[in-house]
Length: 254
Ligand SMILES: Nc1ncnc2c1ncn2[C@@H]1O[C@H](COP(=O)(O)OP(=O)(O)OP(=O)(O)O)[C@@H](O)[C@H]1O
Image (cartoon, rainbow, N blue to C red; front, side, top):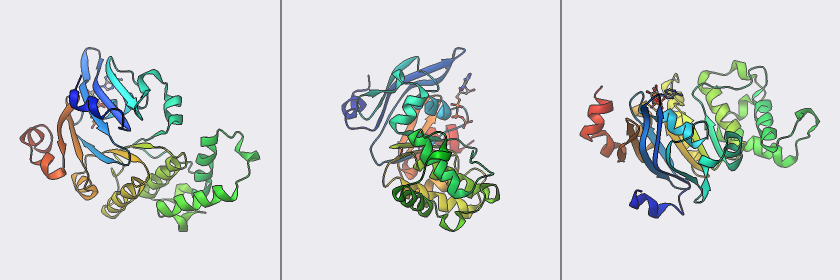
């Protein structure tokens, strides 16, 4: 067990230690260890096949590790929980492709997400409280879409759909938000807005963002973890990580 990481376990929001998983004998994760602190925004980079998606699958309970420990908020053993339990514990995941309800308005998408958190079903019979409305308005302001509230999601740009989906996750009040390649396919302006948005969100929760866009990672200005072959290759500031010869050889120089 990694001694340094072991010492930080009680206070860390997310703690992975020695996590390994193999698919048909191929080690997708190979003794992966890292910690995320409360309120931290962390960027994860690394070449294709480095294990970034598998890491998120392990955290969200989609994949079980063959070895290693995964703890949330100190003592919750995520390897013993299923996907639904992990989501309700406060871990939200944003997949690369937006999955908003296109035929509903922006507001209704957020309302549906708010109700999903409560398990209200069918939504038809539930009336929004003043508090719910205030929360939806707050989320709209956070994702900078207050003026698009009554527009159909189908009419949003790709970037706006991504922000709406992030808003829908916020409605579920996650303590940890995992975001997979949010700026893929975005314009430069949308990419810059997304960096601001994620920094804003990380003021009230922890965010782990996987991205290949180095310009975006630089705009985030946070600690970066570079994965390669299922383990941490380098970790630190973007300048530190991007000048590491191992990172240049395995990722940036490709
Ligand atoms: N369910 C699975 N069955 C078999 N192999 C898998 C499975 N999931 C992942 N792998 C393999 O594990 C390795 C790590 O994949 P993973 O998707 O985690 O990498 P990644 O860093 O997310 O890559 P990318 O940047 O391309 O998304 C890859 O070689 C992949 O083919």
